Image (tube, rainbow, N blue to C red; front, side, top):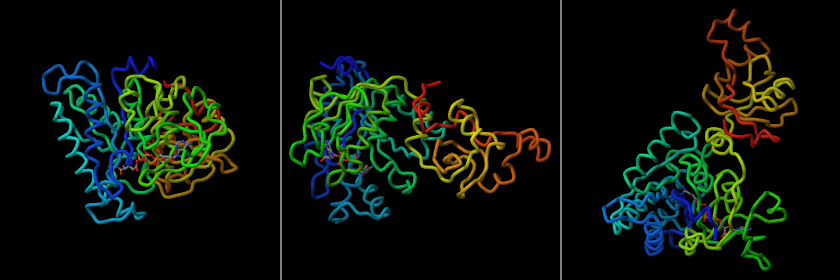
Length: 382
Ligand SMILES: Nc1ncnc2c1ncn2[C@@H]1O[C@H](COP(=O)(O)OP(=O)(O)O)[C@@H](O)[C@H]1O
Ligand SMILES: N[C@@H](CCC(=O)OP(=O)(O)O)C(=O)O
């Protein structure tokens, strides 16, 4: 038995598109009902509508795009972003209607929570998401989370919901994360090919040496790569299995693949920054600044900047690279790209004297910075 899962009071369950929709691009109502049966059963009710026996579940549901294909007469998942977004807009409404009806069979309410990666990296926004989720759980409502597909642009999209689910698990301090896919476990290679064997436990990164992480199925995105990444960043036990095994997985039985949690995790904000964003430009650092940022976790000051690329605005995430162009960190920048050339190489004291006190601020404050290389990349929360 997997004790940590058995003891869990608060879980995040994520189901992929393939587990929720049919090949013709519509909602698989029977499978959704079966999944809701399991979630409601695990959660338990004490007779009052919406009340729980102290167990809480947040459900991360993919499938908006896949469920919108049939109604829009699209034969397969389109590549065009606007078409995907139109499909998601139609499919998401249908999915939530289905969940509302299905959970209502148990007297449980649901609440839709649509998150964007871009929103999430800003402290005030992710605190807000955290509070909303907590509030829904306090009401005994089941939050149904998805990416806000209709507004996200290609550059800032998660695309898959695996990492989103891991970040949500982190955000609400869940005790476990259950990833439900169309495959019953992680295998040594793509199970569609002969000879692949099930991996029962992943305790450390070395357990994945030689494992071939293939691409996704018919309607999913990300394949196993994003699931393994999700397991790495979740910071809690993760079970990967198929939707039909959701019940045994929640009961702590030996199904699927169990990822044991890694040690200390970076703060949620740094996780968002590292995994939910892409740099909107680049700032080049001299070796002293690389040392200060990467080894000593200091803020980036104008004095250590030697170049700037891209057209970003203050508040955007940007990549920090060394003098060979290697990306070493990412951070939320305090200046527009156009302002930086005039500040480069200058001391903050000089800038305050010549340009005014508002120019004394860092290019990137250490609280909005995540190191992407070496040991520091996994440094503990603080
Ligand atoms: N090493 C592997 N182990 C298990 N599945 C794999 C592996 N490599 C590739 N896959 C494929 O990944 C698919 C699941 O990914 P994806 O389609 O993104 O799922 P979901 O929609 O559930 O997020 C499976 O159908 C499987 O064929
Ligand atoms: N937000 C998207 C998720 C896209 C997707 O395919 O995710 P997944 O099936 O989890 O790999 C949707 O709802 O369609």
